[in-house]
Image (cartoon, rainbow, N blue to C red; front, side, top):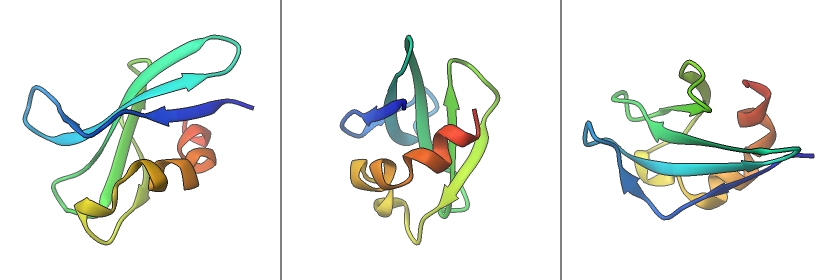
Length: 79
């Protein structure tokens, strides 16, 4: 079963706040997860795949490593 780890919050070149992702399974993959401009929809990309909606949060502050851990299956299912 793949695992998903998130780094401390950081900023993308466009200024959006999110987390770098590290996926471990048969190999290693990386990605990025963030809350969209709507303030609720969470989007992710792994290994340069197209951005996909992977869930929702009540506020952008609710996107935390704990949220990512709790939603690992839903996130990885999109890729």
